Length: 168
Image 1 (cartoon, rainbow, N blue to C red):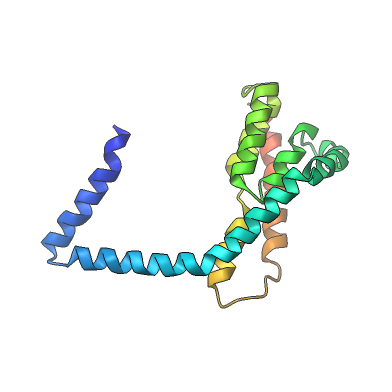
Image 2 (cartoon, rainbow, N blue to C red):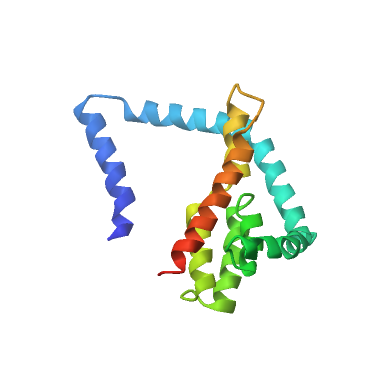
């Protein structure tokens, strides 16, 4: 059933354009043109953040940082097995999926660690990726408190999520 959703949306848009007597082809090509220029503007920022994330993971820095942060995470109620996920998630969704898969393989999806990992992955965002996209197109160039507040909110959400997962 879900394989029909995109074609259905596409046909609905074409039908609405025909009813309103709009030139859907010109609107589509203009949208494509603006999307290409947006991608050309954003691409250098995306490439930089993707390379930084890969260097962070491949160099082992994320592993050693997560080992160092483990005692603090245990103290605030987050299993030490999740520290690497919490470090990678604000940087990369794909990298976090790899860590999440490893957690599920090692501990199981229905374990306490697996449930906490699911909550952390599902309720947090790739803060640096989103900031890269937003601030590359925004006239605001000073990040100010945006990233620290987003990271603090992520931490609070992780603590709350793991607290709730104890009772599930």
